[in-house]
Amino acid sequence: MFAKAFFLLALIPSILAVDHAVTVGQGNTLSFTPSSITAAVGDTVTFTVVSRNHSVTTTNFSGAVCPPPPGGVGPNGFDSGFLSDLDGSLPSFTYKVVDTAPHFGACMQAAGGHCRAGMTFAINPTTTQTYEQFLANARSS
Ligand SMILES: [Cu+2]
Image (cartoon, rainbow, N blue to C red; front, side):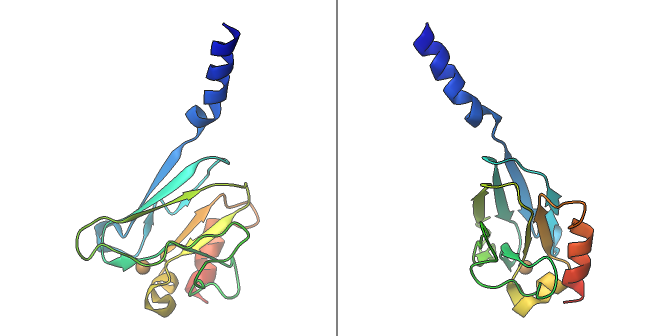
């Protein structure tokens, strides 16, 4: 009985963890859908590219936003690398959330052209670092 209860308790974190699905390039647009999410440690975010060739790469909140640098901006940043749906393969990239810090991402395609066009994404933005301000920073970077 005790062993069974312990086993069930051990399962709880994996039961509560959520995968957040993000569509990249929906309708052939330069976009992440949704563009901002709130996620808990242990959650995953799965980015699926549904048009063209894009990346999701973490970058700075302000200043040098576009293009995001190869490898992404950390700590705990990430870089999917270029993922092409030109062959219709719907490639995806999954990031596991390991902290509660805000992470701001963008596409590095076209030397930052997609990023400056607003192809931006946020995990856990804050009241002082909002997604809207990040988007404005990207457009003017
Ligand atoms: Cu792109």
